[in-house]
Amino acid sequence: MENNVTIFSGNSNVALAQAICEELNIPLGDALVGSFPEGEVRVQINENIRGKDVYIIQSTCAPRPNDYLMELLIMIDAARRASARRITAVLPHYGYARQDRKDRPRVPITAKLIANLLVNAGANRILTMDLHAGQIQGFFDIPVDHLYSINVLSRFFLDRKIKDLCVVSPDVGGIKMARAYSKLLEAPLAIVDKRRESDKQTKVMNIIGDVKDFNVVIVDDLVSTGGSLVEAANALKVAGAKDIYACVVHPVLVGPAIERLKNSCIKKLVVTDTIPLTKEKQIDQIEILTVSSILADAIRRIHEDESVSALFADADVEA
Image 1 (spheres, rainbow, N blue to C red):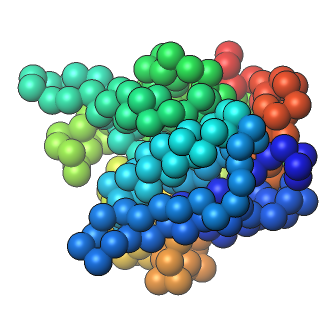
Image 2: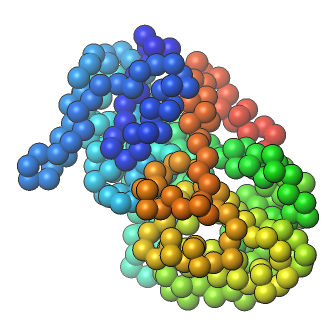
C-alpha cells in the first residue's frame, strides 16, 4: 500500500492517525496544518500525491470543532488541487451529527450542511464511525462507509466475564444498537424511558425491563456533559441494579461531565479514542480503547476494493 496510499492528519487526533499508520505499516503523510497570524487555517502538503489514494483523518470534535472542520475542508481542497486520484475523508467522530433533522421551528439541519461542505470541497468518499443517526449516510451523494466500534467495546466486557449482565439503552432511539450489544454479550435488554426537557436536561420517566440484581452496561454513541448518562445510572441504581458500567463510543466530555462522572454511581466508563482526552479527563473511572485497527482495516479494504461491511458480520448491527 505504501506506494499508492497516503494518510494525512489534521490536528484533532494525531495520535489515532499515527496508530492507524502503524497498523498499516506506512508512514504518516507530510503536511503542514497550522494557522496564519490572523488565525486563518494554513495547509501545505509537502509530498507528491498525484494519482494516489489519499485518506485525511480528522475528528470534528471538541475543543475546537469549527477549526478542525475548516482544517479538514482545506486539506481536502489541497489534495484535490494536488491531483490525488481519490480523496477519502476519515471522520472517526462526525461533528454536528445531532443536528440531523428539524425537531423545532426555524432550526438548521447542520449534519446535511456538513455533508455538502465535504462533498463540495472535493471528498470522493466518507469513512466514519458510529454516527449519531444512521440516516446521515443518506445526506451524501458519494459513498459512505459507516463503521461500528461494537466489537472493540464488547470485547472489554466479554474478557472480564461479568456475571448477571444486562444491556441498557439510555433512550428509545438507541434500541437497535443496544440489541446488537445484547446479542453479542448474550445478555437481556432494558430501556430507559426519558423525556428531554431542554438541550442540557433530561428526565427519566420509566425503566422498561428488569434490572434488579443485574450488573448493567449502558450503551450509547456519545456522552457530552454527562447529565443524561448520570441520571440514567441513578435511575437504574434505584431500580435495584448492582454494578453500573457505561459503554460510549465518542467521549466528548465537556463542561461538568468529569465532575459528574466522579460523583456518580458509574463504576467504569468505557470509551474509544475517536476523540482524544486531555490528561485532566483521563480519570480512573474511564477506560480508553483504541479503534485504530478497525479504521486501518477499513482503509485497507477500501483501497483493495474489498467488503467493509464484512468487518461487522458477527455484530448484527443492521438488524
